[in-house]
Image (tube, rainbow, N blue to C red; front, side, top):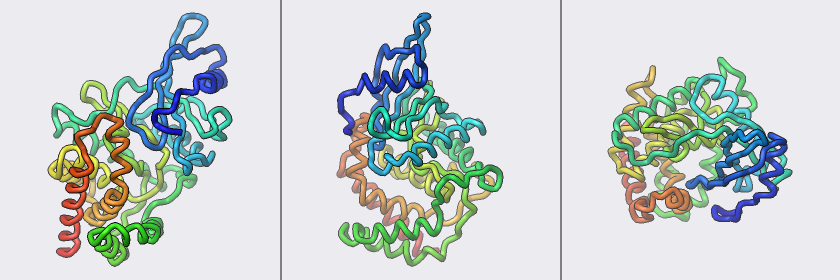
Amino acid sequence: MTLTQRFPREAAQNFVESYRPDARILRVRRLRGGLGAQTHVLTLAAPDGSRERVVLRRHLVRESFNPERAEREFRTLKVVNDVGIPSARALHIDAEGKYFGAPALLLSYLPGRSLYEPRDEVAWTEQLARVMLSIHAISPADRDLSWLPGFSRDEIATELEELKPESEKAGALARRVHATLVANLDRVAWPEPCLIHEDFWPGNTVWFRQRLIGVIDWVNAKVGDPRCDVTQCAIDAMLVHGPESADRLRDTYQRLAAAALPDIWYFDLFNGLRSLLYYKHWLRGYHDAGLTQVTEAIASKRIHQMLRTALRESEGR
């Protein structure tokens, strides 16, 4: 399945009928920017003349073809809805891939779009920080999240081992970052885990009239380290707007948090290493979303600058 593959209308109609037997698909519109799933807004018509807009989300990448992963995404949406985090409602699921050959979800429609170039970047940053804090306030101590995978010290150690061969091939900076991460794994503080989105960036938020009205794409949600979300969002803000935008995002989160997160530099390096290895792939989603000004050259330069800054912080601690 590709971003531009022809829409499977017959399969979609059959899936819609399993949710609402009297509905037919009237219109289809693709939502741009995703890499892990193909997403369309469907306008449904009923015999009585009423209409409903829903979102069809079909998984693209092979690791998402696992029915349990789709079921976790569906269940996570119910959790965040229950606690009042703005997000789409989970309406219907085909976890087994009966209709499309891959898992699919029907979600409620949020009337807005992702916002990358706000009129007021300070207000935009604060809204991103506040919604992250509301996500990170969900704790396994208060709510059963045992069905979600973990992502803290041990899982990061495993990923670092998996990234070692690619880091070795990617050049001197990648090797130095990887070595620093491994050397400091047991020297940094590890906060109590909480719910994390694990793919939190402006492209996975929905805005209406400059106001954040939803967080989307919860397929990677975990119980883990909140610094994963903060630094990933900061990196994406940096790629679009420059280093000052990343600094503002981190500083705003820290200012609004009940307690500041320690050792942010470690996760700048961790997510920065991911960025260094995979940014060319990520840019496909950027460009599909219209962010064509973020070229490979700009992305590479900004990632290298951020990693060198984080390495200096690691040496001065």
